[in-house]
Length: 125
Image (tube, rainbow, N blue to C red; front, side, top):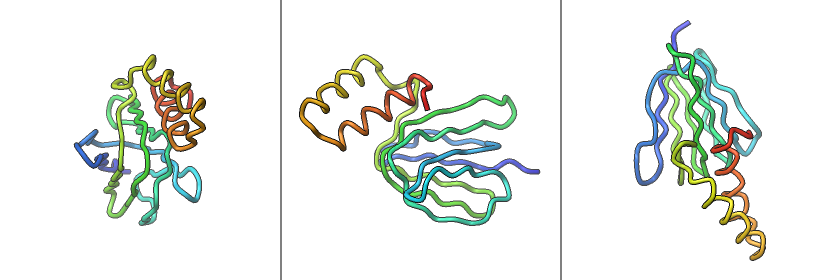
């Protein structure tokens, strides 16, 4: 079976592009796994990690994604995020401080974003 082509784009930049065998993302309907040959879909993304199992080397790319859309058709997957960052770009200490600050300010949205960033950066997803 052919691989699927993935484009992960944030509002301000392209995050990752390449071939994959599996992508897992969180939508408003729940977590979804996309493999080559999946039925066409259009969904709304929730804040959560996106995991991409890359083709060829069998590696994994993880990104923290906050809102946006996911679209799949003809073995092309587009993830259009409001905000996204790769796990290896996340400063864990800064994310932990943001999580503590958001909890003290009772900002549920900021708390969720910080939790997702930490989960992506530490592999706890």
